Amino acid sequence: METSLELPAKPIVLIVDDTPENLALMSELLRNDYKLKIANSGARALKLATTGDVPDLILLDIMMPEMDGYQVCQILKAHPATRDIPVIFLTAKADIADEEKGLQIGAVDYITKPVSPPILMARLKIHLALKAHADFLRDKSAFLEQEVAKRTREVTAIQDVTILAMASLAETRDADTGNHIRRTQYYVQALARKLSSHPRFAALLTDEYIRMLFKSAPLHDIGKVGIPDRILLKPGKFDAAEFEIMKTHTTLGRDAIDHAEKQLGTQVSFLSMAKDIAYSHQEKWDGSGYPQGLSGVAIPLAARLMAVADVYDALICRRVYKEGMGHDLAVQLIVQGRGSHFDPDVVDAFLSLQDEFRAIAARFADSDEDLEQKREQLNRISAQ
Image (cartoon, rainbow, N blue to C red; front, side, top):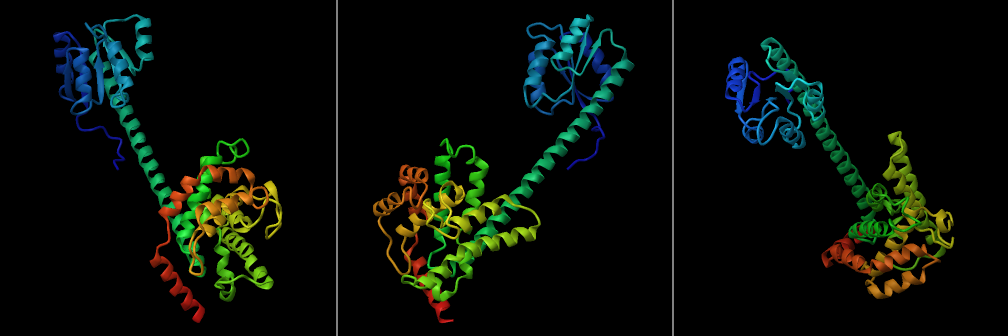
């Protein structure tokens, strides 16, 4: 990146005047210090300003036929490629009103004829130096914006990889496949987008909230890492004692994420949401869930969304120990839980998104190879 404020060896000056004598006079005066472009009309000036080497400064006459200098300046200032080129009016119009108009439409200076060569040269030098400084600041600002964007992408990528790595670690000890992570991630995103226009949720479900929700969702079952294999891998129904241990995965997940956040020494929005999801996605609308027995809107919204997504996916998808349920039957069970297990409005959103849920399930479907690998993996864990 160029950081010098020095002017180029020969800055380019475009001289615009319809009088040959004036063009010759200006050319003679400036040719030793500047590379010149010459235009004898407004149309020609606009063409030269946007083709080839862009001028560093434009000396512009006002009184020209067809298109006067004011019109030329206005067009230059409206075009992204030429709006930052300083324009100096060089004219015989000496009225204050004319000068005021010229400056209002974007000129940086206004010099009346006959021209004093020392004054003209001094003003050219000043405005070229100002332009060089402005160009430097713009270039530096653009460079810094690019660097910030680059660092932001890197941080986001690190976050995403870390989350997926943590979530995948939990999945290696569970009967689900890694695709469960992806499916539930897209389910909750679809639900959130659908509900973002709902009066109950519009204020909360901003684009940023939905982005954080999508990022956080894979950690909903991270606490299963702490559940003993004899319970986590059990293919049949849990007895009462086993179920009590299994229920602790919500607290274990919340505590693990909370510990990570405390290690950072600052609150992180997506980790805060991840804690809500991990801790509360097994709560039920009527208060019969766990771990706290929360009910209604006391359950964090992110957890309410995950509850529908998680149950739907558990119903329809194959596991190493069961076949998946048909979509229609799964929908019936979700509807039966409307107002008891699930937030009624979230269920209504789910019903309107059935085609999208089917598409997500198909997109991230578990293959026979996935299930076989999972079966072998779990067998190895069980034998240890």
